[in-house]
View 1 (cartoon, helix red, strand yellow):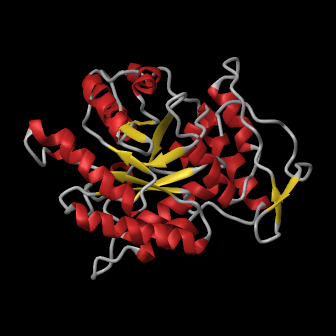
View 2: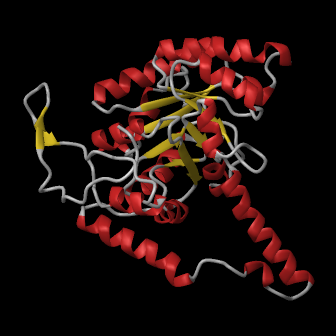
Length: 332
């Protein structure tokens, strides 16, 4: 499905289609390209659709296209998620680092599944746009099984996951991807499984071998059931283009200051650009800088331009009212 503007027909008025089992369901709105529409205008339409989870999953999958790459902001709590949605994000993702930090835990597979899922559930219940969850290595049980994590993430409302190899072997991540694919299929949700390949980020092999090793791992992850490949740590255009040409599913890269802009990445074949933990880092920077200014100079200029109290509180008020009407509550 191309990205752009969707019609304003209400959910009750939308035409119905029959699936293979004979069940009736609303036809997903056609999204057409219209550069006159701001990202916020498009997101406002999406936010009003109140789509079932299976349709949000279809919508999220459709947003991965080099023609207009999915620019994905990462959040760590309800207020950051609502601010991102209100700014026009057509979808959001959690940052495992930001979520871990908000829970008083360092990043890197140190957060437990229960707390990660609790934060995710609060975010997914508060927003209307599709949500993808960064589940690090999958928060496995003592046997290495990620079945319960994937089931819990889907039950929390997510329609996508990031799952990473890190220091694990490619074979181990392939096994976990296959489990995620099986669980999602059993639950009837088209979960977008984004496999993160950390060859460049960790320097797993010599520089001359990194492209070949990344492509080799990507092929294995796709074979296991991955829908997308995430390669953080790649910044030069030549390597990104080579990866996009070699990877047969949507390519995701991490972006930040100094990286190519989203449109430029799309021209190289990138379908998704993620901010990683940088927004959470920026929030921590604001706290540190405001504190330092207050203590050193007794002034407050670093807070100039901050969002108004009424705006932030209003985001939560509206979300709480919306979720109450739909029978849900925001717990975190």
